[in-house]
Structure formats: C-alpha cells, structure tokens
Image 1 (cartoon, helix red, strand yellow):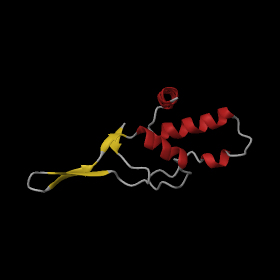
Image 2 (image 1 turned 90 degrees about the vertical axis):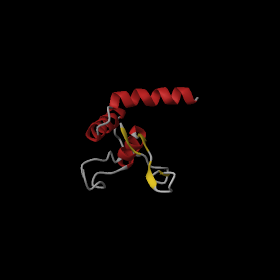
Image 3 (image 1 turned 45 degrees about the vertical axis):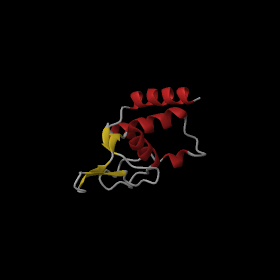
Image 4 (image 1 turned 180 degrees about the vertical axis):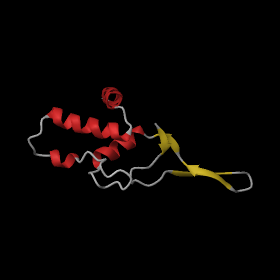
Length: 102
C-alpha cells in the first residue's frame, strides 16, 4: 500500500522540492509503506493507537510464555488483517526478502 513514509526514528521523511522561484511545492516522501505499517502493528500494544485502540499485536507478552507458534501466528494474522495488510502475501514477501539477503 502507498502512503507517507517515516524514517528509522519514526520521523516523517521530508525532501523539499522547490520551484525555480524557490517556492516549496512538496516535501513528504510517498511510497510503499507496507513494511513500516507491519512493523508498527507488531511493535504496538492494544490501546496505543487512539484511532483504533484494538490494533496492536503486543508481541512482548509472548516472550518467555507458553504460547504455541500457531497462537502467535493467529494473533499476528488478526492484527495484520485489522490494519489492512494481507498476512499471507506479507509472509511470502518476508521469506523472499530473507532468502535474497543471505
């Protein structure tokens, strides 16, 4: 999905574009933000996002717990779906990216 991009410090990516007269025409960087949306969904806990308090996988609670991999997978799938990210496509995309980086 396309949207406004953020950098590693969660700041808006801004690259001002100027007209010949020096007037700012645009500045926000727009592009495929699927990865950053997925990362934010995985990092957030429920209640952190005012617009959708139920969104946030809250993966920290799975650390040193007795949840099965299928339970974790189910939770991620539910929150990705809520955020509008196709879980199956994203999972394929991640495995492809990991394989090509090795």
